Amino acid sequence: MKHSLCALASGLALAFAGTAAFADSTGNVYQNGFNNDADITQAFNGDATSTITQFEALNVAKANQSHNYFGTALIDIYQKGYNNYADAQQSHNAGATSNIVQKGAKNVAETNQNHNTVAMSDIYQEGVNNTADVNQSWTWGASSKIVQKGLKNVAETNQEYSTNVSSDIYQDGFNNSADVQQKWTSNADAKIVQAGFMNTSTVKQQFGYNQHADLYQEGWLNSASVMQTGSNLNATAVQIGFGNTATFNQTGW
Image (cartoon, rainbow, N blue to C red; front, side, top):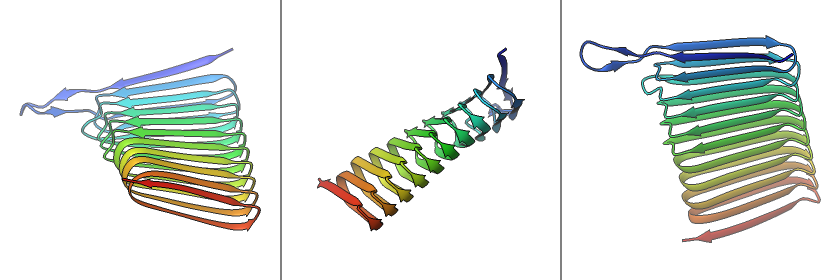
């Protein structure tokens, strides 16, 4: 049997002075079992907080926060098990923060943040065959951090049309891949750290200004690749071990 729980929160109050004052909203979901769904939607609030905790397998957690102009938007998702899916969506908020923690195997975590003043995304995964995907766009200050421990994990970050952006990926294990793409950005920093063997790291920074890429790999048979197009380009790769390869391609304006 499939259980589904949906929480919808929206608060709006008008002050007598003629300015809009938005009420706060909090949504909490706890599920223990299999094949559960949790969906929280929050819009037009002051401070908005969504918390979802799920244990076991085949669970789905979704949180959507939008148009919270006068407060902070926070999403916390924790899943322990396998074949779980977590999705955090935040748009048109003053400040957006998303935290996803998954422990187990074959889990997928996705974060999409766009048109926020400031956006921060943290994803932590521990296990095998996990996937983390972060998309951030049209944001004044965007930061993304992905930490994965295990093997055959995939981490991807895509940041576009933003300024003051940073992406950090840390992977410990083998047969992992990390991919950072930053396009039409200014003051962009990309950092990938991998420990183990047969790992792959790729950074693509296109059509931007003041772009930095730092790659560190420790182990053997690892590969690092950096492609940069724009102005004020800087790339560094440090590899410790044997059988490693590093490739840079920089095209300036």
